[in-house]
Amino acid sequence: MPGAVVDDGRFADSIGVGRGNDLNNKKAAYERLAVPCYWVIDPQQPTLIAFELDPDGRYRQVAEVKGEDAFEAVRPFPLRVVPVELLGTLAR
Image 1 (cartoon, helix red, strand yellow):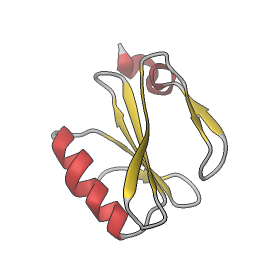
Image 2: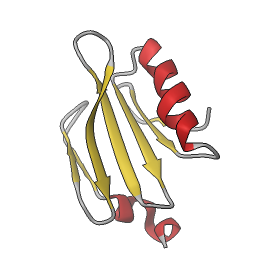
Image 3: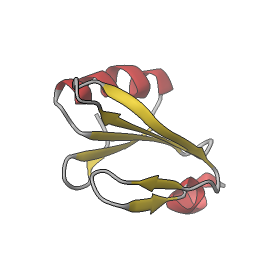
Image 4: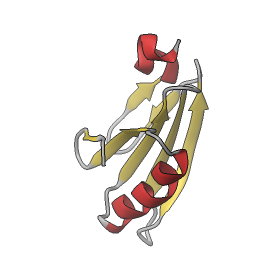
């Protein structure tokens, strides 16, 4: 599973061959492992979808931002992410 554990258990992953795999199988695997935050980044859109574990240990979507819209993360620490800026020339 390509991706990178960033810090404090947050996991970011770019969409590979199958968007459904990233939003279903991978998300379910990270949920079972209790990874608190999981972000899926689609370089073709560009889009960031953020999930966080709820008190029951299930992921809930907390954001979906596209292009130049900003995601203001709170967990695991404050961070501002703009998909088009994050992806740089990949988004073009």
